[in-house]
Image (cartoon, rainbow over all chains, first blue to last red; front, side, top):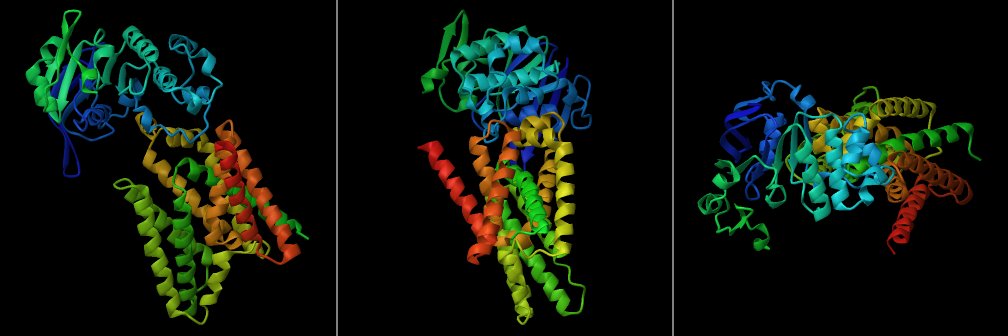
Length: 236
Length: 261
């Protein structure tokens, strides 16, 4: 097991964000973290990285991220695209260089070769997300944490991102609202709403009861390729 | 005509403003300039008050001290609330302190007017020395940490996840701003500092093709505004800093409308 959490809790002042989360993730697994807004998904990612000092036990590749900053050397984090400051006129290659030495292989894999000299802020949401993911892959991480990588991203870029994550040889945590784009590549789903509601294979997690407990409303389930998945689009 | 010393001063001010103005505009905290410059005035007022009791009068020292305290209060508060709330509270606190200090020394309170409006052409050798040291320190820190500053400003969460101490960089940025404002306050004035620091960088940000271009354009715009302001001052006997600030502000409005029409 490369990521192990036991009774992990974190509060912002008096506001509880996550409570008693316990889970184990094996090397190379892709885990989707889902739950309603304010469920503590982003907080959990930051606790795994040690950016927030959670209570309880947490081990990442045998290190306690709260004490050992070497976790940050093997982990890459892609924040929500909305947190990036588009006021700064940065070229794509400048953004990529923030992740370390630029690797042609990563650029080719994400199909961004022709974007290198363009301004990041002038690109579409899909390509901005590809660039941020490419940046995170420059250091060849063993652990990848993605926070809502499909928000405002078109289907072409979604597919490309999913394809790239699938080909990676690393453990991944992906926060999503809509699990459908990655359902084929996830090994486990973590359904949370401050506390852990369900953790396991998609068919174990996606039950009407679990989704009702998490979202406090009925979430329609549809069967796709033999798997029941929440019908996210139905909520719009 | 402008003396060689005047020209050196204008170039040094432009260097300082191009770095600090760019940083503060990228940080999306333009109002921090207004807060810090007015807090620095409280420091000058405190220095005047101390001098009335026979202490050595050092405006720069206390202006810097008060500016740093005010800015750190604002930055710290912004961790918990919106940054403008912290800035507003800090602004109000230090402006009220300034009025309180000056009410004890009404007979010499007029000294502070120099710092309110400034005068580009009345800088002393001590002012020039302070400008030179400030420009050197700021340029050195910025050159060494340029890439880290840009990473932190572009993507603070991503930068933190890469091991960058973002709070330290925020405080460093704030310290650079404080040093800058105090250094140029006597030249451009606390009230007009806002326009001189924000407008040129805001113009550059709109039209530049890279972050380095923003710095270069900010430098050119600032120096041009200051030069025209100073030359106008000789001809028409009006405040050089006011004309410079006016030009920089009008240029921003023109660029904004040209780009968004």
